[in-house]
Length: 131
Image (tube, rainbow, N blue to C red; front, side, top):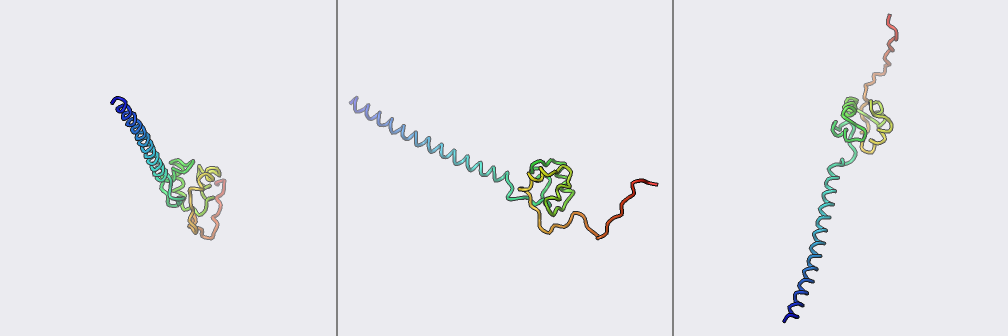
């Protein structure tokens, strides 16, 4: 009876070892799936759903752009509307390199109104010396 009992114990241990491996693989697979889902959700919440409209974005949204801080975001908002990307070069704190980094994340509406109304007349220059 000892030999039969030992064989039964050995088979049971082998079955348990196989079951443990399956459970470990299943657990590992579940962890990987949940990690991937978490990363996708996190990345999705961090990324905008396409480029943001420079004329409608809030200061908080603008601050997420590379090289844009609170003061520059306020300057962008106060200089609206912008019709084309080069218009942003007029904003203090935005140079060609910053603009280049921001462009993939911005959109400019076609037919945007000019930033300054034009009346068709050129204002007279003020004289440098006062009399």
